[in-house]
Amino acid sequence: MGPSVTLTQAPPAAATPRRRPRRAPRRGTLVAWAFLAPALLLFLYFKFIPMAKGLVMSFQEIRYLDSTWVGFDNYRTILTDEAFTAAIRHSVVLALGTTAGSLVLGLVLALLIEGPARYLWFVRTAAFLPVVTTMAVVAEVWRIMYHPGDTGMVNSILGWFGGDPQPFLASEHSSLLSIMGMSVWRGTPYDMMIFLAGLVGVDRSLYEAAAVDGATTWKRLRHITLPALRPVFWILFTLAAIRGLRVFVEVYVLTNGGPNGSSEVLMTLVYKLGFQKGELGVASAGGILLFLATLLLTVLVQVMRRRQAA
Amino acid sequence: MMRFDSALGLEARRGPVATAVKVVVYTGMVLVFTGPLVGLLVSAFSRTLDPTAFSLWPDGFTLDNFVQAADKNVYHYLLNSFVVVGFGLLLQMLVSVFAAYSLSRKKFRGMAVVMLVMLATMMLPEEIIAIPLSLVLADLPLLHADLIGTYAGMILPVGAWGFSILVMTEFMKEVPVELEEAARIDGAGELRTFFTIILPLCRPALGVIGVFGFTMIWDQYLLPLIVAPEPGMWTLPIALRSLRSDEEVGIGVLLAASLLALLPSIIAFLAFQRQFMRGLTSGAVKG
Image (cartoon, chains in turn yellow, purple):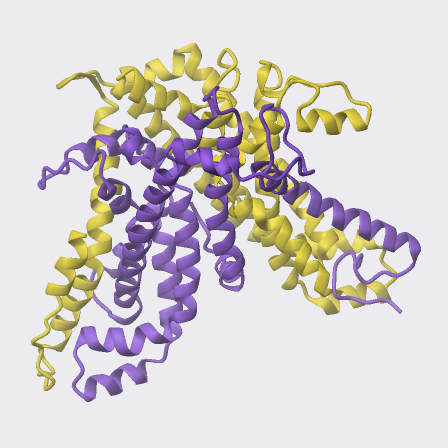
């Protein structure tokens, strides 16, 4: 607990009550930095130094303690290697599918559940539980539910509706889709809650005016409710897309990229390369690329929002 | 008579059709979103040897799974998790309130840069830096300490969290400055003013960053995975993966351990629900 120790020493405890006005601003600055020091130190050590190190390593080939400068070779490897391009493709598909699914379902559910009744509060709380549940547990539970035999839980439910048993995670064709299903299940209540908060802000008198004008529910929804939710929508979209691109735990626990690489995403591949094969340079380049994608996505969404608002 | 409290007005509609739709939609939602978790709860207390037997209906109540869990070190992993979340949350909350005090109360050169740094850390998910972070943890620059296989290695990296700092900063801006100035005129030092005047006024916000911090640290996966290579230091979430592959004990221990890993975050959420929703809708929830 080093940082808190430095902190208790840092603020000038001996400060005299009768301060001289000329020195006051400097003392204030010192105190300000002292209170910020623990946060900045921790960020420096565990965010910025690793980031810088990752950037340097991404241009190196690292064998044991030796490292040689290789320029953009690692990036070239990633962008041309078949396993990597497949992983990037899976990451994008998973991110888009999860984002779209959660947004649409979250919006529909938010609209259905909007209202002041007391029992709706219960429904909302119950529906929100997946969001606060530890990801590793969610993934283990879904892994069991996705059991490919006809006794598996999801297959039993499919059976009630006359569906054939599906292999889910066990098949190359459905593994990515199955992971997406679980992620949508966990992402939907979160989006629903944020949409609900956005719905509170919609001007009620507009609904009334629309009713006076004889507008249908659909028209009211399209011209009043949805435009009011636009800012919320973009925030959720950015958050979900970034979360989707960097997905790791879900895939690591459910399939670990299998079967046959069909659900390998960028982060699981980076993890395998870095920690199991010792390819630190290539793995770092993968991390940097993911960071650039995240950055690009955020900037793009911001620009689009500005343009729409203007 | 029409009502205008909601966009669709489904909840306000009366009549048999509307009632039927409401019952189907609302019970459907509860079933879909809590079903898997209820299934876990029920199955963890059932005699389940068959790995597919995961159901909402109890099948012979038993505590066997939890007894067997002890042989598989589940309670040791649980203890590790509690150590990490306990000290991690304490550190994170302290760091956050200190930083927020500075950002909300003081005016100094470089403040805009510091704010930018905080936001930048929120844009930087730990997945991206996992590989270099593991090297940094193995040999801290300047200090040359090896944190691999230690609690500190799992605690320090979560000590500073941009979200907590920003939520706390926003809240502290609302706390009136007059009280603090009065204390200072009475001769109270910086730290005393902070602990006796500011902190007690921030209790609602402490609830928010406390419950978010708890869920955030409890949910850590990649960090313990790179810090704890030996089973002795595993936290419960990363131990789950090794419990499932055990043939002799079947799926029961995995279910019991999963339930134990699930309960603390659910309890924290239910107990601090109001604070949780407030933090969620403050619009700043990231990473």
